[in-house]
Image 1 (cartoon, rainbow, N blue to C red):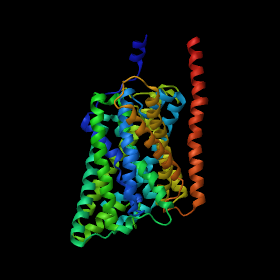
Image 2 (image 1 turned 90 degrees about the vertical axis):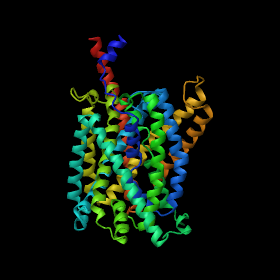
Image 3 (image 1 turned 180 degrees about the vertical axis):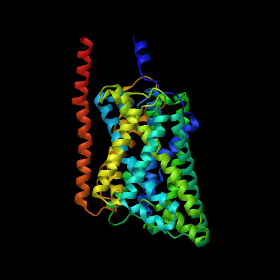
Image 4 (image 1 turned 90 degrees about the horizontal axis):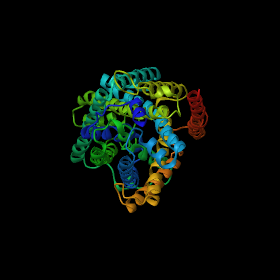
Length: 472
């Protein structure tokens, strides 16, 4: 009977190898779009990067490898929390992971808009602040990425891979220009620039954004049924992807501080820095090409998070906590097309709503802040799962020893909770503290309330209807 049920379950194709995973981690973890908003807080952010890499990123890698080894399969953070803490906690973890990306994917679209206008030339840069242009470009890109992911990871993964390559090249160009400028003019930053400011409120907000920037190692595990030999492939890919991403983050932040200091535009900061340094070196002609390359990288980021996080409602649909049609697989392409369409449609709606009440840059910051809170909630479960397994499991079936699991779990859990709390401090661009706090609190309550509705009301009704149908 169980074999027959397994045969009736939708099956996904195993198309992701080790190289694909390393590139996926780079494009998902190393997101240049958050670097400008972090660098805007000055040299102190370098210390925050180092703290976050040690206390959050390292434990994250251990957690992903350990939990993926113990609980392989499609779903990642959803599956892990469900297996360790129960059905509701699994659903809440997966729900926050998914809804955070509903907010985060639009910020990636906005970043694409801010960068792509440089391809058109210097006279078109103001288009990035034009609401009509920004929203229309964002919607078109969302549609294109959704279609490519529906066609299949066999094709969609190349957008991710090209994005990773574009990200690495763009970061390399940025850092190389910084090294050349420094060798010619000397350093423009001093030790004083790396001290904590007297008013640390804005810096505290960036700590949560840094933790948010470092998530992504779990993304491949959400596609666990689509990885070739996951237990052998995943550990090495996590290690290489993590090291590359951490080095790139610190190097690009330092270069931005060197090039433009704290006066960084949160949407155009990378191209702004490259343009500034290239102009000083008399090679300003490289800016449009660099912007095109970075635009490709951003499209890859959007594709990776759109395609990866859509697997959450796909699995939830199979478990009957959300409408069952979300668990449908395309008959030709074998992809969760219904979940992908819903994710893209909701992201489009959120783009329209936030643009209606905010400027382009403020909309970016507000959506990013709320996305950070929702993104870090699943990590409370991830690190909590490590601690629970370490204290309660007596079988030696995992990858790491009990002391390692406890150290990683404690470090990651404390850092995650702190990152969530500090996110309610306003970032530098926010003009009204009251409006910001209201949006953050109401947004958090709204998304968590929806999770409770789907699990306790919709899920129970769906299961009751299913049981009644079986009896009849």
